[in-house]
Image 1: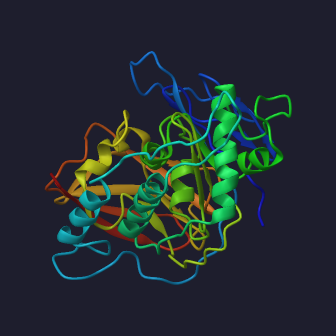
Image 2 (image 1 turned 60 degrees about the horizontal axis):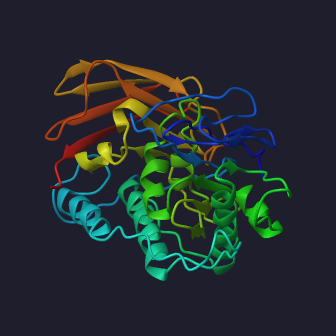
Length: 344
């Protein structure tokens, strides 16, 4: 297993971040094993934060990008009816589920089954849009994640290495905190935050874990205000050569706007265990016209061995447009088309 690193996020939807085994805490601004990257994503005075887990994904070798069925389709990815149907179906009920514990009484309790089911459905729809297989829940990971969420809530802060002086401290909760995405929001809402990953420009680590070849099974724990998702140490063995978000094929424009900061602002991303992206550069065309982007190579081993992000420069993704993405300078050339569709 490769060295574990922790992603970063800050402010409104912020993340506690660490690297090389040391993990920091996040109260209002995330602090990393190094620098703290602040990224305000809302004018709200309330601080909602996200913590993240990093580490290595199992290497993938062969697979075709995307899922194909009936209907029109781009180069890989889902056809329009399937993409919209799955997206809308997953969002028909986003209720968090009742929390049965007591923060004041240090009782982890549990989150109702429907809350976990809705969280898992969102994770798996994001993975399906990319062409990855679904993951399942694990009872032991759920229990650890629930203990983790209680500790975060009781102490009103995020930490991947909570000290034993913390309120409601348990060894199980502390161990799970060290292998989880963690958030100061309940579990269902946290999924969209992980996928947008605001304030985390050097890693996009939360998103990369959701889209990791090695993800699964996962654990989900939640109070009314805090949640933990156990993601490290999975035995997933997907072999997708690369995972892009937004992915090839049809993608709902609504996916750009699920958090306070848009996907164009935080960045489109490509991750891979099989393709080296450290020297890569991205170009984008829309109907043959060059669209300016900034390319940033991301830190390695956050859910994938290699990754980059690219941000539109002076333009925004719009429904009805197909963007041809070409990656030069990678160990293998990549080219795919993202068709943005409206799913009202």
